Amino acid sequence: MAGRSRSLPLFVAPNTCLIDLIEACECARAGSSTDVPHHPYFYLRCESSGIIATKPHTMGVMNDAAIDQILAALAVNVKEFAVCEFTATSAIEIKQLDKIEVHFVLSGTLYLGLAGGECIEAPVGSVVLVPAYIDQVIGGSATPSKILTSQETGSRRRDGLMHYDATMGSRSSVVVACGQIKADIGGSFGPFEGLKEPICSHVADEPVVGVAFSTILRETGVAALGSKALIGSLMKACLILALRRSAQDRGSREILPGLFERPSLARAVALVVENPASNHSLADLARAAGMSRSKFAKVFAETIGSPPMEFVNRARLDKARQLLFSTDLSISDIANHVGFASRSHFSRSFRNEFGLDPTRMRRNGLNGEVRDAL
Image 1 (cartoon, rainbow, N blue to C red):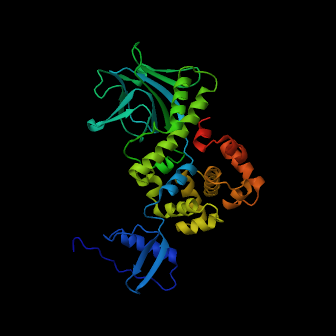
Image 2 (tube, one colour):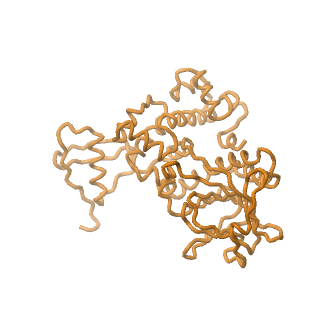
Image 3 (tube, rainbow, N blue to C red):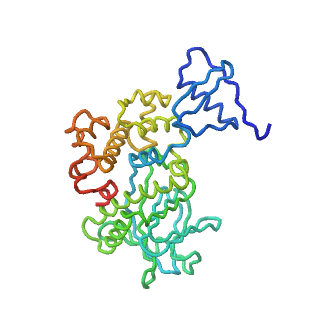
C-alpha cells in the first residue's frame, strides 16, 4: 500500500554468516520502500525466523569525519596542464576529452557553458571538476561574443605548461589554471568513475586556498624552473579541499560515485577510516567486502587509486596528523594510538608521507593542506 513501509520475506540457510545475511538483506531492501534508520546500527529482520541482526551502519550515511578521512587517504592525482586567460567577452571551446578536467579560478569569474544551455558561474576561489567526454565552453562571460578554439589560442611555455590565450591582445579579466585527472591503464577514473555532472566548489574562505591560488597565479606568470611541479602540488591540495566541501554540501555519493556505487567496497573502506588503528589485513578487508583477496585488491586499487594496505597506512597517518594538532599526546602515544608498533617506524612513515617528521610538524604548526601546498 502506498505510503506504508514493508519488510520483504527473506529465507536464510542455516549457519549463514552475518556478513552474508547483511548482503542478502541489502539486496532485498533495494527493492523495498523500507527506510534504514540513520543510527549507529541498522536492523535487519528475517521474517522467516524472526531473527533481528545488528551491524554497525557503515553503508548508510557516513559522518563528516569518515568522509574527511576517505578524502585524505585517497590517491587523488591531478596533473598540472594549462593556463587559460580570457577577457570579459571571449571564450574557448573545448571538445570532449578522455580526461577529467579541473579548473582553478585564479582571478575574475569563470563561466562554463555546457550542452543544453546550462551555464556554471564560478567566481575567483572556485574549483570546478568537469567529467570526461563533456563538451564545454569556458570564458569570461555567459554570452561571449568571441568563441575561439584551443588550436587558435594554444602554445606551449618553456616550463611545459600549455598557455591558452583568448585575450586577443587585450588585458585578461579571467585567469584559470587547468589540471587533469587521467584514467588508469584499464580506463577507470577510480573514485570518480561514474561522475556525470560538473562539480563547482567555492573554497575562497579556506585560508590555504588564498595562499595556494596566489602562488599558482604568480607561478603561471613566470614560467620558472620548478613552476610546473609546484603548481601541480598546489592543485592537489586545493582539489582535496574542494572535494571535502562538496561532499559536505552535496553528499559523498555524488562526489565519489566510483566508491559509493560499490557498497561492499565502501563498507571495507569505512572499516578502515572509522578505526584506522585496528589490525587490518588484506584477508579481513576482503572478507568484509565479500570478495576473494585477489579480486578485492584489484577492485580496491582500481576504485581508490592505491593498494588496500597503502590506504590503511595513509588513513593511520592522517589520523595521527589530526591528533598532533588536537591533543597533547606524546609522539609515542600517538604512534601507538594509530596502530604503529614503534615510534621510529611511525616517524619514518610520517616523514615519507608529509615531508616533515611529526615533532617538527607540531612545532611549526603546519597542517596537511599547508604541507601539500609547499
